[in-house]
Figure 1 (tube, rainbow, N blue to C red):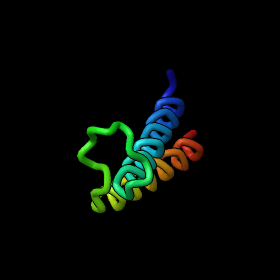
Figure 2: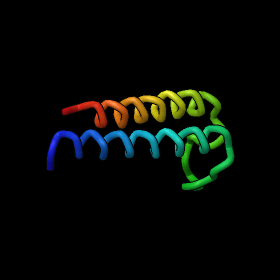
Figure 3: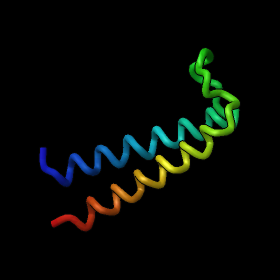
Length: 65
């Protein structure tokens, strides 16, 4: 697997994880039911930061030769 593909995989994983964290923190997604992140507001911010970092990694993977 090339470096560009690894960066894309990492970026997508970060983006999806960030969305999951933000949705759980806001209480919009109660899965898994035993997650301590559900309804915990700090996870909304951490999820947004992780999702934005994932976008940056995806952007960087496009710019990499």
